[in-house]
Length: 214
Figure 1 (cartoon, helix red, strand yellow):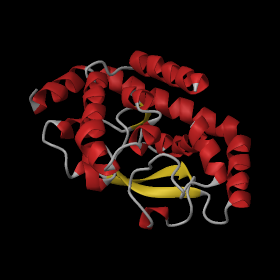
Figure 2 (cartoon, one colour; figure 1 turned 90 degrees about the horizontal axis):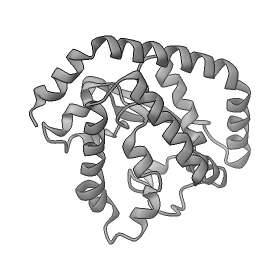
Figure 3 (tube, helix red, strand yellow; figure 1 turned 135 degrees about the vertical axis):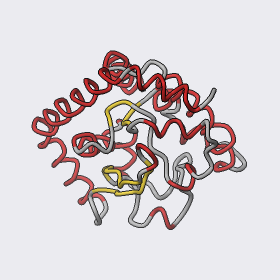
Figure 4 (spheres, one colour; figure 1 turned 30 degrees about the vertical axis):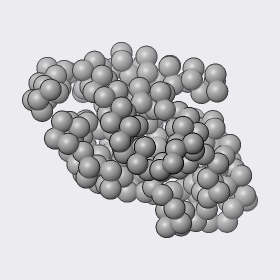
């Protein structure tokens, strides 16, 4: 697949992409207005469980390769990125007690409503990677950077238990780079070929169903 293939798809769907962005603004704005008590409770629980920042602001790569800082409720000890891999494996001892609950329920991702509202992310789109792994992308794989990254996508659903999958690997990071990351990108390509507000609604509902099942 050539780079222009995805670019051509996006060019033909300009109106749908505009509607998708409008939907992101309206829904994220309403969600922040309605859910702020829940967000506050989560923040308090994090501080009580493990002193330190409420948010984890990791650098990720967004649309057109522009770096930004993602909002996530902190689920690991302070300076966890300096104490291990960029990926999380199994019952990583860097994860706090509250962090395990937040990760299981995906509530740590709620903070990304802020990224969606200000335009750095979308509700649905390729999950943003850290620069280290994006630097390994081939030109074909870099097509995922043509759109805003998202809170969820096909890969998020398929690999929602990624930590457990990596736990049994001899070299978790190598397995991530050689097996999981390329498969995630292929799932991202599937989404890019059908990108639209309707596709987003289907994926959001599928994500909610997957979290409930787990």
